[in-house]
Length: 183
Figure 1 (cartoon, rainbow, N blue to C red):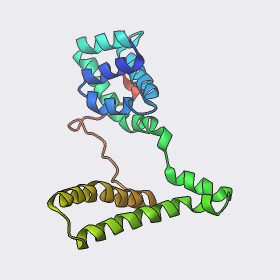
Figure 2 (figure 1 turned 180 degrees about the horizontal axis):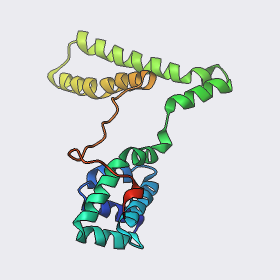
Figure 3 (figure 1 turned 90 degrees about the vertical axis):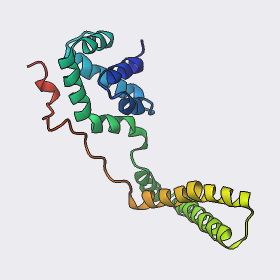
Figure 4 (figure 1 turned 30 degrees about the vertical axis):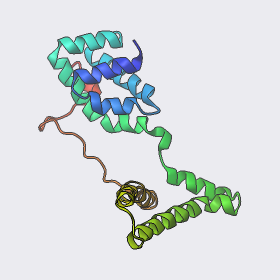
């Protein structure tokens, strides 16, 4: 059985299959899977991921400790999963500092300007040009999906976006550190 399959089974055993599954599907999913399996082996004392899965399925207390550990380490697992796209702005700063010419230095700004001009031009066109009933439906679809996505993406890129996710709570339980398990 692959490490990703074992990690998926472990997460599903504690009811976090969907949440951890999204991290396993990321580019660095194998590394996330390794961490999940290592946590399960540490908590259960099992020699392998398969044995840890069997132990979790049989022992409700171990299952609870593993669930707490996953929730406690969720932010770290997310960072590992999305390490390949850490910061697009840092890439742009490095490009600007490299001084590779006017086009390389301003490509992002040019592309952003063109995309925003398209978005606002499309919005103006569908607002002031009469459309057929079918055309209106397509225009609505494009406006809500493509244009809103373009504008939102540009704003998120340049100004940061999205509110930070709040860590999950387990009904007021104190989450323990991995070193506390087995004591």
